[in-house]
Image 1 (cartoon, rainbow, N blue to C red):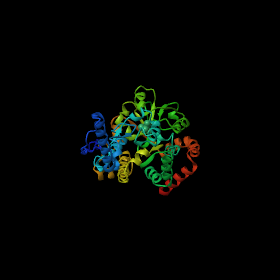
Image 2 (cartoon, rainbow, N blue to C red; image 1 turned 120 degrees about the horizontal axis):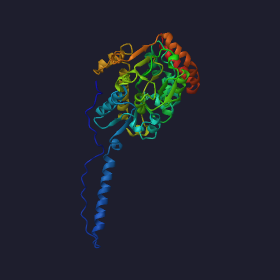
Image 3 (spheres, rainbow, N blue to C red; image 1 turned 120 degrees about the vertical axis):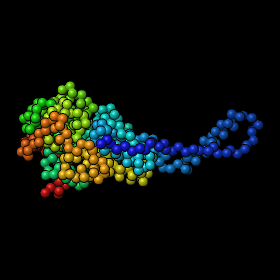
Image 4 (cartoon, helix red, strand yellow; image 1 turned 180 degrees about the vertical axis):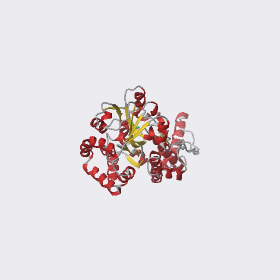
Length: 395
Ligand code: X2X
């Protein structure tokens, strides 16, 4: 299923047709200076127009014709669809008044996805649906979700993730994002991240030795893969597929739903299903842009982000959770074409290693020191709050 698109067209705002007010008849001055009289007339019209506009122009006169929204992958991914749905909802619900355009493939950051937070904060970008990983260099608390085998080790990883987002730890994370100067609207989801490679089936840390693995430009990922004996390299997503095609790297990690859209199976025959970290995306907006909206429009935008976030979360989870995601998408009438990624990837020749709990534990044990080291960096209080939030739903 393609991303739903709204039919709305951008509506230019603040464009009132203004009738020239009739000027009082005035005797020509005996200087007979027509130019001066002409100027006076123009000034009078300008003053009248300005007064008219400032009296009658509604608060949204300052709205932009187009707001720019930043995402990293293409529009055909769950991420892209979740972003497009948000802009569709805002356009529809505002009657075409608020027009947000999705810029895919890191166009707004010229590929440098770890600069995305700074560009949103300084106003070069208005809105974003961005990854917690890409914002983590600026907001250290966002590394919480990338602690190795932290959420993944819970009995139900989706329940555990939701417990964090809705619990006291989620509140601390949102506060940290906002304290750094970005307005948070809602959570979405990129997903739990799995490993693919071109060389062999990876079931143990030994299998990973010296393999060159592309990771996002975030230090925690370097620590994790070094602890596992691999050779990680930082690379933007915009450069990753060509690096994979040319064999510059042997492997990479991303959510399962991202593999098929980029034809990963043509280059990487092997996938390891280990869910080691998760990437809940964030719907966010520049605070000055946010303040420029009327209270009513803020409400509308916030609700659209929540609704689109739910849609994106369901897309990221379809076929992977207990069936809740599928049911939710059915209720929206928006079930995508592919609902079983394992089946789909097997059909195109990918070999998927589903790890036993013991096999997963071997990876978790190797990365446990990294988790402990980062517990302090992120903030022990936050990590403890997350552990308590997750424990509350673990049975
Ligand atoms: O670069 C990645 O791996 C991606 C697309 O998942 C993110 O932006 C975090």
